[in-house]
Image 1 (tube, rainbow, N blue to C red):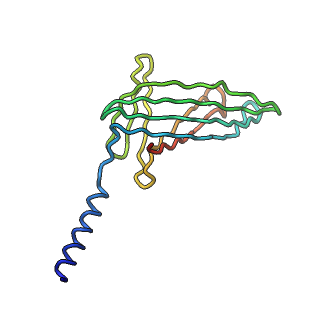
Image 2: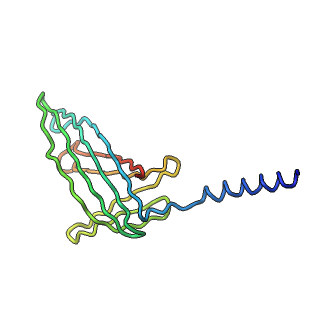
Image 3: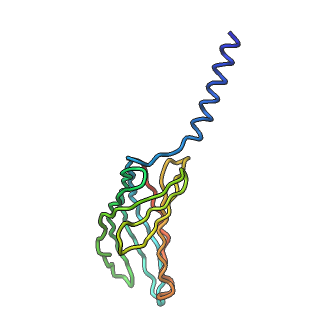
Length: 153
């Protein structure tokens, strides 16, 4: 009886360690991020409160291609006046590489050479993309770091 119990225990421990090393396969999966990003900026001495809303879907068609459907909107409040940010977004196709933890999305639009790095958080089971926009060389203070957290659908 002890021998059967010990063998079962060893098999259970082996299964736990085997499942910890399991690779994440993105092919055929869909992910969604719904984020609100707020930031206060001071540009040319004027304080502005920015609120941006992001609604983004990532669809990994197969092991190397996919699509991104993004919608965004927002407001900027400065000097007591609220100004809407024009709604935007669209659908873009991409190719990608992914090693189980880190990946890169590559635009397939020949007019864009943009690449978007991403990580997979195994603990939280989510994809994280950090969008960085820095125009501070032309307008000091105008930089954003926007994290998008994608959950599997």
